Amino acid sequence: MFGGFDDFDGFDSVSEECGVFGIYTKENSDVTRYAYTALYALQHRGQESCGIAVNDRGIINYKRGMGLVNEVFNKDSLDKLNHGKIAIGHVRYTTTGLNSHHNTLPIVVKHIKGPMALAYNGNLINSQELRESYENKGAIFHSTNGAEVIAYAVTEQRLVCGSIEESLEKAMYKIKGAYSLVIMSPKKLIIARDPNGIRPLCLGILPDEAGYVAVSESCALNAVGAKFLRDVLPGEIIVISDKGISSIKTHCGNKGSLCVFEYIYFARPDSVIEGVSVHEARIRAGEFLAKEHPVVADVVIGVPDSGIDAALGYSKRSGIPYDIGLVKNRYVGRTFIQPAQETRESTVKIKLSAMGSVVRGKRVIVIDDSIVRGTTMKIIIKIIREAGAKEVHIRLSSPPFKNPCFFGTDIDNRDFLIANQKTPEEIRGEIGADSLGYLSIENVEKVAAGAKCGFCSGCFSGRYPMEVPSEIPKDKFDLKLS
Ligand code: AMP
Image (cartoon, rainbow, N blue to C red; front, side, top):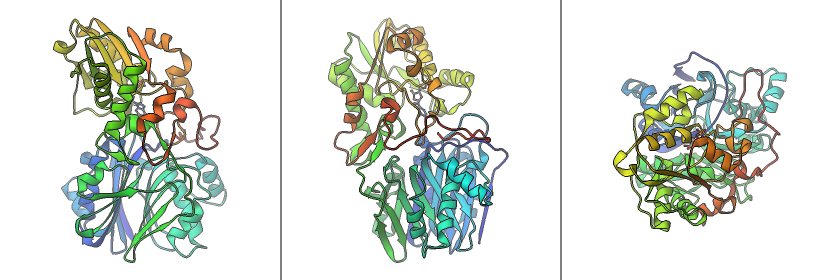
């Protein structure tokens, strides 16, 4: 049995830059509140929609909706979801285009072998192909979401496999791409990472060993009071039930290709991924930048949030003082969230303002994580100049962003990428900077030195950990596999 409610009224395309959560407690507990708290801590990974599914003695209840965690959930809806032993949750990033209500997760399916809830972070590169093959066999899809394709791949195997984890293990031979998965069956929490470990996923334990928690980033473990145990291995499936915890490693063996942009931009600085603190990785990026692109200046400032740590690193290495030069309105989300260009421009101005007393009459070094389309930086430079800066030198803690991402970020089209169309000098002119310096491709993976895994830096190098389609395909639903 299962029951749920959605705040639905639209339909469109798919993109899975997201955060996931899963919990298994030995006794019935307020798993809904744990999910809510953890999703709050993962909000930076997705602001478009969110959802929680709770398993109360085999009955899966869920609520999903468009908006931030505190917009979708209130005391009433949390109370309705009630207690249980297992829960999963999801926050989802925006897509370009229309609303995407039908793509909210977790997906909850009713199957002959029992109900299942599923959510993931990543992107399947063969989603469309698999979807078509299932449709040709009579399947009906309700979303354009890769999660539904994974759900089909798993349930297809359930007819021949003894358990849900075995079904997933078999399904993993079919699904290709990036996925950090949380699955809930009536009795089990199952978590898994794709064989390349492209998106992060880690495991923690609650005090008094009351249960296990799986989250995209360790910052969400801290939020629920869980202790970090370890990162899920690339390719690993972990099963948690009343029999305890076990691991299936058939798909393991690959050192992994974690998205290096997790360190540069996506993750929260207080998270530790594969043994490396995101904050320290950003500091290192700033130090590399100072070495690679020195400039005589009076002050170093960072673009909040992800440019701040790198600005500290630049200042540390160069000896040029760091100061708070840009103030962020904390009531506005990430500007990238606004799909239409015009809205994005006005949002940057709502979001950021320059600190006149810090930049006036100064030669200012501005550190940001990346330039994608170039819109944001152009406006930031304008704001800083309007506040009286004498010179504005831009330094970026990533190399030129030249290639699309096939593994779960919202960068789908080469033509939008300014670094793909113009030289650094042309970009400098276009954004109106006095100088422009990117982190070198040689140093980008070194920012996460000491990590227990390898990296994917395909968006910079064009080299991906697996064969990728020549362009990101779009289907009749404006399917965007980003
Ligand atoms: P723009 O150059 O105007 O397209 O936007 C650049 C800004 O978008 C960066 O400074 C980041 O803060 C943010 N950003 C970069 N990459 C991504 C991504 N894959 N998804 C969402 N936001 C991003």
